[in-house]
Length: 178
Image: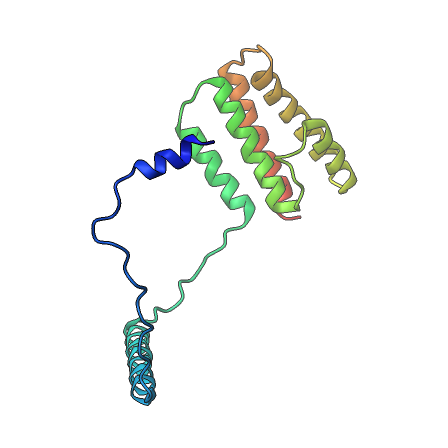
């Protein structure tokens, strides 16, 4: 412990010496000019902001609202099927797309979450929703065949893909009036 005081004593003293503390600042007795200047600056900032916002609001041109044409779900599905027919994807992709088109149609037409349900759950839901037996039978056959191609190693032929397209068209035409 005796080392520290000896070390401090060895530091050369400040050549300028100690200085006195600074005196307090003089506060002017009349602060009214400062308050008026601050208020004037504040009014100028608010006025410039108001003019800028008003001018910007006036320059905006109001466009007439666009007409939104909502297509019925069956028209959307038929357009998607026509587009799929014009393309020539591989069989697995074809069956995935056509299955999704029909599931999206069911979801839009009947508010059934068909894209989120398994095939079995979708068939059960459709049975509860009072679909006709022929529709349930066709859609069960359609989706199970699509699932075989999508999830199993089943290699579908072009004739089977054509059958899926016919089934999809039949289902949409059968259920679009409901």
